[in-house]
Length: 219
Ligand code: 5RP
Image 1: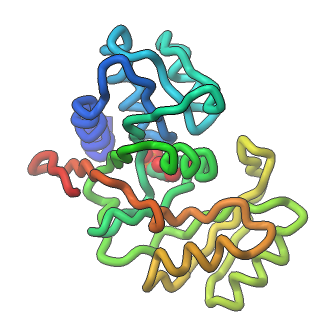
Image 2 (image 1 turned 90 degrees about the vertical axis):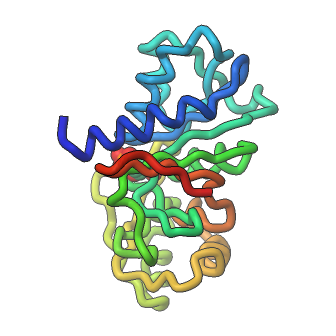
């Protein structure tokens, strides 16, 4: 395991303390979350099951014998655990490197508490070095790309990638993200954009950050 993977695993382990007995756990997507799913399996008898933000996470959860519920039948998600591509000190995030941003944002919105798990490389002074993923309706891809160019970004089509919702992804390079919540709200208004990978209007509530010196928690 790489040193970075070891940190991801430590953050994932630390997130277990937020899981509530008898509850349905919101589960995100990505390599850090994969470690979390493996940890969750060790206490699966204590939870009712999970809701999942991707087909990949659903598959891993089920392989561990954890029941995955349809979100439409679930009213209460006390805790959602997910990773991030970048986080700032206000726990505003860039997500969607794995392309699961839409379902992630839906579950984050529903959850009472959003716990983000990450290694220290994800914490940045300002969001935007990581290209901002945007899920788009296929027929709107070029139009949306032009809108992003007008705003100073450089869109790159994630060629050959189809989201779990049947849509496409534009990764926006060099986007100026001075005011994350404002930009998220503005981009949300462009027709054809399904989801912007900025999680600023609904940031994480807790950030578990693993570094070589140990695991710390930011709120
Ligand atoms: C997937 C995501 C992931 O949370 C993000 O890409 C971080 O992934 P990893 O834990 O593999 O670094 O948003 O859409």
